[in-house]
Amino acid sequence: MVLNKIRVPATIQEDFTKNCSEWKKGKYVICRGTLTDTYYIGHEAEQVSEMLQNDKEETVTICKAFAIEVKKGATRSDIINAAEMTAFGLNSAMEVASFNAALSRKFRENSKDKECKEHDEFIAWVKDELDTIFA
Image (tube, rainbow, N blue to C red):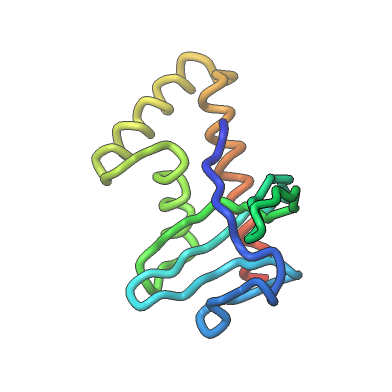
């Protein structure tokens, strides 16, 4: 599975949302909004080319993370569900139910099914990442 990760501040000095952001262990992990909070997990460094003001190109290291947006006051379970919806492109409770029913059917037919295993590994990864935020 390839997750769509977005650029996040790599350092507190790069953070222009200091009044609503939280950092844990040197990582930008939460941006608190008015109606929603966005949690960032799975941080990784990436080399990219950027154009400088003087039209010169420079290779820089940026930080990317997987973003999970939830309504304010979300529980840990709500965040896990939102991560699943984001990663698997699910847009409604009906789509989640259908997706999980299909996974259950595949698991009954073959407990080593690749898609089932990938899903289980993703959920375990999300839970581990959230442990670092809520620790």
